Image 1 (cartoon, rainbow over the protein chains, first blue to last red):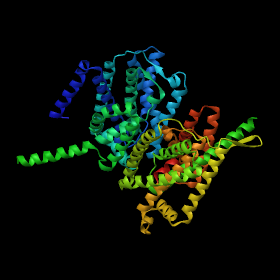
Image 2 (cartoon, rainbow over the protein chains, first blue to last red):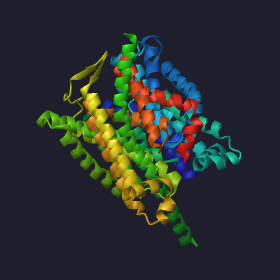
Image 3 (cartoon, chains in turn brown, blue):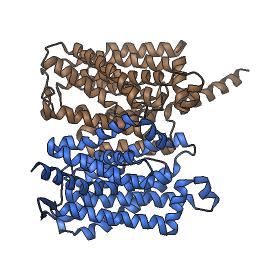
Image 4 (spheres, rainbow over the protein chains, first blue to last red):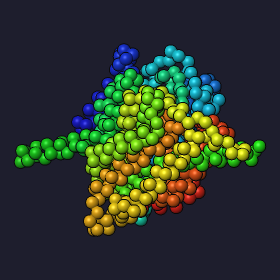
Length: 311
Length: 291
């Protein structure tokens, strides 16, 4: 980012940092949800967009973070953010062996493997005493949403920075090379396994850190909502709408759809699932590369025309 | 007593396995021809199951009425989906796989939402054949036996269709070698549409039988997709005989964990088994999936 883009970015971040204390509860929670969904979409975009390993179960780590935090607070009397940090660490630590195991699978095997993992952890959370079984765990009520918002904002910005880095670094090129053809990438000297496990860890640590904030914000955690694969559906829909495997895609898609998502999911779950599922299908037919590439193409055309005009 | 219990659970498991085999065969037909794994498969199974349950509640509709009806409806729905969406998948194989997974993932949630709207989120079952026959120390639930036999009949009909009809030959030719089939004048577009429709219809048929044994609601579709996929992953993608073995294994796993643990754990059993097998033989199964 240079010049005007950088200035715009700084202004947006300043607004996001300074405005929330002056907002009412409703606007503040909308802002929180938007930042949360954008960050989750960015995390999903690393393993599925850049590395090309479609995961339909990254919510596994979100739920893991939520439960780690709830258990730390309820049973260990830690402050929530220590629990959330722990959730991120556990997610990262688990993602390494899990990555070595699961990333040997491709395509549908990996996608369904991750989906099944989320379902399995849901069963575990449902039947274990430590996690409070089907009833879940209740956190102390009346907690302030503001700290959770800032926590989410910082992690979201870090995830965005990580995406910028991936998009412009040799690491990112290695990821995209193995997405296009793993054998060719390997022949060209890319450490395929290490590279994709790293991508997987990035895509795991972010939801791991954010899940704890979400649990603290909702003041409870229970198996069905903590491991709800609708979070993956959302990340998929938002990222495809914005542009899969692009820097701006998750931001565009996430901002456009978070509000709709939040309104529909709570009140009309049927309409929510039908519209998000349907949107994914329709987008893949009519706008498979999403909004971001279309916008940058239009900008490039305008710039080219501008350059011609000056001559 | 102990041996009798094991025998009983084995019988129950194998009978359920028959229904899993049928569902997995539907998934396999689609994979064979189109090289895509339909993640919305479980939703078609569950949609038909819920339809059967509702028709039974309202009019005591008989299985022999409901199953053909669901079969025909699902066939039309499958053809429609293929013509409207899946036909537009990109030509190049790698991006077609990615797009097809994303697309059928979206479809699966679309149908979860649609079934929630049509059928509500209530768990339903069909209390149709609740009796059991006793043979020696074992009891054989009528519902399970009927579901098993019906699955077997449909599977045999499918096998005959694939082996003896012109359509079956076209399907097998397209599965084995796309270029070859094209060169021999097979209308591959038509074969794809009919295969997807057929796979969907078989899913619906297995749903009508599954509801005789299990209680389901719209949100249990993902479990069915996972179980069906586990069956063909164990047996080998595109391998019809392997499907039967895989289904028996999954049926037994569900039956034993359902007894010794809980029904919930039993739902996760196919998945755990699937991962364990991939741990032991990742190369073998990967080889098949890459083909």
